[in-house]
Image (tube, rainbow, N blue to C red; front, side, top):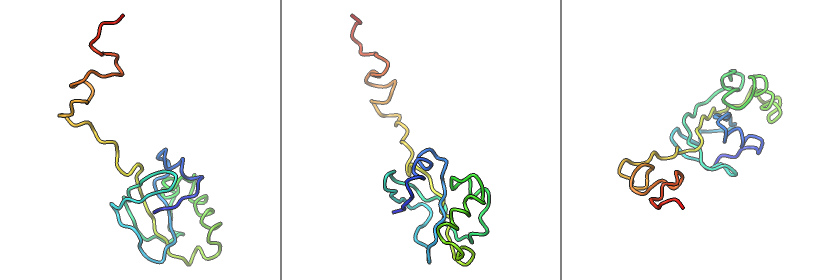
Length: 129
């Protein structure tokens, strides 16, 4: 399970936040793993790597939903204070939703344009009255 502050859930759902930085003493996740995010659903971890907080970049900040590296480091400083330079972190990249919607199978009789008429198009086969 990955926990996020509520203020980040909409950013994740919109795709604006695709990374998080976590202070953990050891690796807890692996790339390819699916994790549940309360209030949101499942995310798929696409990358997991150690990073020193002061080595975070502007790209990291944008992927993490921040406008700049300074804003990301400010958030981390608010959480960890003066310890920020001495702690070890992990950069976790993820996708949401964990599994993209499945494309219709070619042999699916319910796929639009096949088998049953598409209800959205109003093609029911009955004469209009």
